[in-house]
Amino acid sequence: MEKPGRDPRPEFKTASFKEGVETLKDLKMGMILEGVITNVTHFGAFVDIGVHQDGLVHISALSKTFVKDPRSVVKAGDIVKVKVMEIDIPRKRIGLSMRLDEEVGTTTWPSSQPKLPRKQKQAQQATKPTVGSMGDLLKAAMQQQNQ
Image (cartoon, rainbow, N blue to C red; front, side):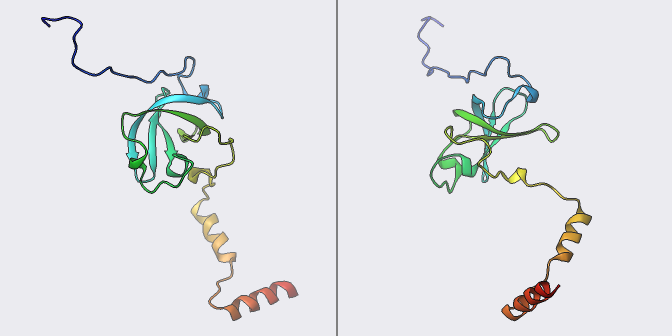
């Protein structure tokens, strides 16, 4: 306080959120945004991009190379550039990627698999032949061919 302008703290950096992007409905596939890592988990990192809902960068989209532990690539508080890969407004989910040159729609996100109701899932599993050995597999194939 005695010496103004001599603050010993390092310069504080913040992410500059894109103007006009304030809700999930403002997001568009392929947008490149700046955000702040809010949490790092074993399956990826959550990024605040300024829409009141953090987006997930899956571990497979953190880097072009294999990532064993997301904490080796990012940490909470890091400012990163991300690309919007998936938007699910009803479930309030945003899929992001740190691989900016990646085409939208080329990644199979874990959340992009359609969720089936339990009864449909059980019916689907009941129609699959249970195979225990190679002989059972051949028998099932022959039965299908004869039908």
